Image (tube, rainbow, N blue to C red; front, side):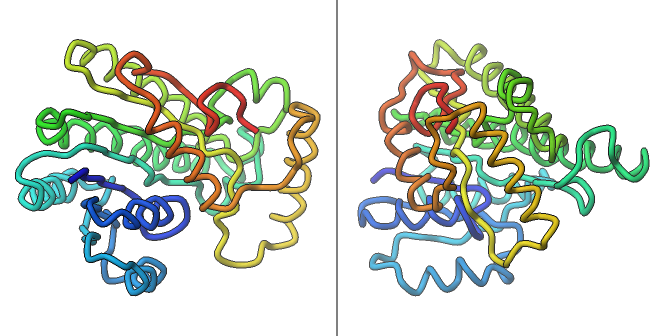
Length: 270
């Protein structure tokens, strides 16, 4: 009975991972969310699952005590092991950080808060989560740890496309790629598979964009098209993205550990 733990499962890509894993009745799926009492999209999805194989677990990437409690609960349910850890949870941006670049923040304080908050969740939170779940993963024969990254963590993409909005997120994900490499190098002899996996550009919005957000998105699309002219300019749905990523997750093994891959299993980000 394969076991899957998905952090950041309340909506978007994380929820879609849960949805797809839940389709197989033999899977044990743990949907980890910051506030189990305030996850309307996950709660609604739970009503549609055919099998009773999903458990919602409280876990906050900013709270090590919460992460440890989640690991203990999941370990009790699985008999002390875990096959797959999916690190999807992330801090995306502050109120002012989505549409601007590093020189354009309204103040040094806003910039500093955005960088610190993003790094705390996306880097420190991921490190704490992996370390906390290592005892469970070590008892698995599969031992796969997948941490979502982004093509914007590839420095060549930034330089060539000149897409520099939401910089704190991109910087934190570049650091996450190194975190993945560090774990892969340290645990190489234990047959772990650590992968940083980019989901492509995915439409996870839950409300209509503002005019400013729409303009920034259209500008970003045009820049990406110059960088990757083969792209059709259309974001993937969460269902499409997760389907692609699951193919990569199924294929990779210890020989690939430490890699930074796209949803195609290579360096083609779009």
